Image (cartoon, rainbow, N blue to C red; front, side, top):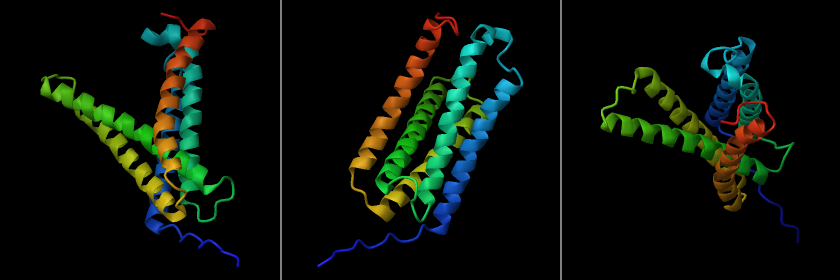
Amino acid sequence: MVITATPPRRTDRRIVAVGSIMALWCVGFAVVNVWFEATGHFSDGKYADYAQGLLVMNVLVVVLKLLGAAVELLAVADRPRLIRPAWTSTLAFGAFAMLGVYAAAGVVEGTVLVVTGSDEVTAASVAYVLFFVLGATGFGLVAVSHWRRYRPGRAPVVVGAVGAPVMLVLILSAAPWVLGALGVMPSS
């Protein structure tokens, strides 16, 4: 007797729309980093000594943002061709967790500033945090939808949700140190 798995149901059109918007959201943020470099945003002023290191960090960030866009598109695809659904779930939950941690940190920081009566809370800073809360929500909707369609088990959720933020913190913590050791940016 041959047991065949039931093929997953098609991706809901609303989730495809959310995933597509989130992919565009990532590309839009990548464009901001490209704009920083194209305009020489950091080449003079208080960050001039860090311009070379910020170029390297901007390239790293652009790559991460474009990977986020690719993950969203992979997660809403009906027929996975490039990587296994379990890996896509891992990546989708990793991206969701990274954005969720960043958004939650912004909410906590903003709340502390409001409670302490700081005048640093502006409409722009509130909009920035809300923009990331909405982004994290979109990534979360896509991640959960993908997981429900393919049911790869709990391991991809745990590995992605825990591993990706830890890896990002390690990369972003180590990169300035490495760039300082290489003399690309001041080590102070």
